[in-house]
Each structure stands twice: as C-alpha cells, then as structure tokens.
Length: 112
Length: 112
Image 1 (tube, each protein chain N blue to C red):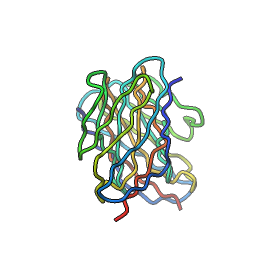
Image 2 (tube, chains in turn yellow, green):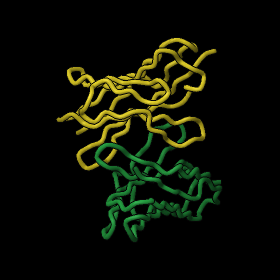
Image 3 (cartoon, each protein chain N blue to C red):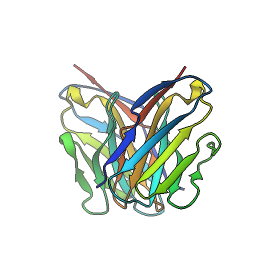
C-alpha cells in the first residue's frame, strides 16, 4: 500500500538559515507528489508538485523539492527561512484512484 | 483548476445536534472527497463521493454518523450527525485530477 512518511513532526530554524523538511514515500510506481502548506487558521495552499517531469521542482515563496527515486524521497528545501514561513507543511502522494495519501505533517518554527 | 466554495466557514454547535456542510465546485467533477483534520493532526479521509452512487467510507467512519449527498457533478454535502465534542475538527472537501487536488477553505466546527 502507498504511504507517505514525514520524518520530523517539528523543525525549528533561525530566520535566514536553510530549511529542510523530509518526506519519504512508498509506492510500487512513481507517484505524483505534492507539498502543501497550512498557515494558522488558513486553508491549504499548494507549494509545489512533481508529476514525472523534471525531478527538481520549484514552487512558490522560494521553496523547491527534489524527487529522488532511488531514495524514495521528496524533501522540501528553502535556502533562507523567513518568519512568514512558519506553518504546517504536508507531503502528499496521489494514488492510482486519485485519492490523496497524506503525511502526518511537519510544523516549521522560525526563530528570530 | 477548480474553485471550491465551502460553507459554513465555521460554526459552534450544541452536542446532540447535526450540521450540514456544503461544497460547490465551479466545474463538473466525478469524485469529491471529504476530510477531517483534528486539532494538531494531519488530514484523514472520511469518504469519497461519486455522483449517482453511495459514498465510499473509510475505516472508522460510517454513513449514519457522516451522511453524504452528491446530487450532481458540482455539489456535495457532508452532515455531521448527533455531534459530540470529539467531532470538533476542521472538515474539508476536495476534488482532484491526475496532477493536483483542490480544497475548500474548510469548516471549523466546535461542539460544546
């Protein structure tokens, strides 16, 4: 069965330092993968998506993610964190029935 | 893309009552999904609603507690029945295609 694992429930970084949010997936094929962000009391927003084109995907707000099939990973990165990046981030896979398989989420904390 | 209008955005309800949440999509879609996000947790799929057939419920969710209607290809409702404080959550509807999912803004339900 397909599954998504976000390796860290919380990540804390200082403003201006790099961000790394880790995600691993398990699937019998190369799925479509997404990162969504949820700010406090706000709706879900798509950050970026991988759909079997370029393995390095650029998203909004300076985020990017690299699909690595050999490692079954889709880690989210940003070179320099901003206070406005503080939010919950979800790694998501799309299964063959068009259902979304959600990771547990990673809460990103930005220290001033 | 798809734009989903979900209402109400929030409500405070008495235990034992029921609340119906509505989702209207600006295009015709075959499948609509209903999720629950309990405080501090990831999204959990409640059911998948196809037009013209009964909804398919995930393990732990039953039709008597969460009846769903899907009268046409652009509209669906989810009812949370006989509510208890444990039902306090964010409820989201979603539609998806092969490369992305779209969400309503969510309904924040508090049961007192």
